[in-house]
Image (tube, rainbow, N blue to C red; front, top):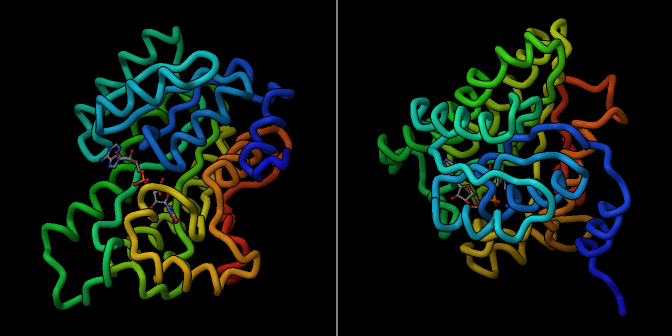
Amino acid sequence: MTMTVRETTLAQHETRDSHAGRRVLVTGAAKGIGLAMAEAFARRGATVGVLDIDAGEVAAAVSGLPGASVAMTGDVSDYVSLTRAIAQAEAEMGGAFDTLINNAGISPKHAGVAHKVWEMDPDEWARVVDVNLTGSFNCIRALTPAMVEAGRGWIVNTSSVAGKTYFPIVACHYAATKSAIIGFTKHLAGELGPHGIRVNALAPGRIATPMVAGVAAELNEAEVRRTPLGRLGEPAEVADTALWLTSSESSFVTGQTIDVAGGLSMT
Ligand code: NAD
C-alpha cells in the first residue's frame, strides 16, 4: 500500500523523541496546520498545550492526540483570556512553556476574490491585525519572562508567502500582517538571542487546510499550477519544519523565515 507524504512523515515521528521533556504551546491548534503541529510535537515526546478560540473543536482535537496534551481555550488577541489559559495549562503541566508555535491566523477574504484596499472595512482590518500580529506579540510577551529566566527557548512565528510577495488571492490586511511577522521575527531574534532563545518563522505556500478548502477550486488549482512541486502542501510538512526549527539540529539558525511552499515563492 502506498503511503501519502503525511503518513510517511508521521510514521517517522513514531521512531524519534527529539522533543521529550519540552512544553510546547501551539496556537490555533484545533485544526489545519496547528493540529498537525500538535500531533508532530506530541509524537516527538513533548507535552503540548493545544490552544484554540473554539472550545468544542479543541476538546475534540486533544482527544485524538498521542501523548500528553492539554486543551486550552482562548483568543490570542485577548491578553487576559490568553494568560488565564496559559496559567491553567502550566499548573496542569507542572512547569512553564519553553517552546511557542504562533500559528493562529485568519484570512477573512480568502473565500472569494480579495477585497480592494478602498473597499476594506476598517474593523475587519483591525481584527486581522489583532489576531495575526498582536496575537503573536501577546503569546511572546506572556511566555518570554520564563524563557529568559531559564536561559533557553524556541519561538516559531507564522508568516506566509503572501508576506513576501504579491498574491492576489489574499487581501491587503493579511499580506501586511504576514509581512510584519518577518520583521518582528528578525527583531526578536536579535533581542532574545543573548538570552538563549531562538526565533524563526515559517512562510507556508498553499497548504491543504480548512482555510484553503474555503477557497474556490479554480483559485487553488491556479496556485497549484504555479507551484513547481505541483500539489498543495500537507499540514504535516509545515509541522516537520517547525520540529526542525525547534530542535538541536537547527541550533545556529535564528531570525530566518523559511518557505514551506513547494517552490511557489522563491524570494
Ligand atoms: P485554519 O483556518 O485551517 O485553522 C486556524 C485555527 O486557528 C482554527 O482552528 C481557528 O479556530 C484558530 N483561531 C482563529 N482565530 C483564533 C484566535 N483569535 N485565537 C486562537 N485561535 C484562533 O488555518 P490554517 O490554514 O491551518 O493556517 C494556520 C496558519 O498558517 C495561519 O496563521 C495562516 O495564516 C498560515 N498560513 C496558512 C496557509 C495555508 O495555505 N493554509 C498558507 C500560508 C500561511
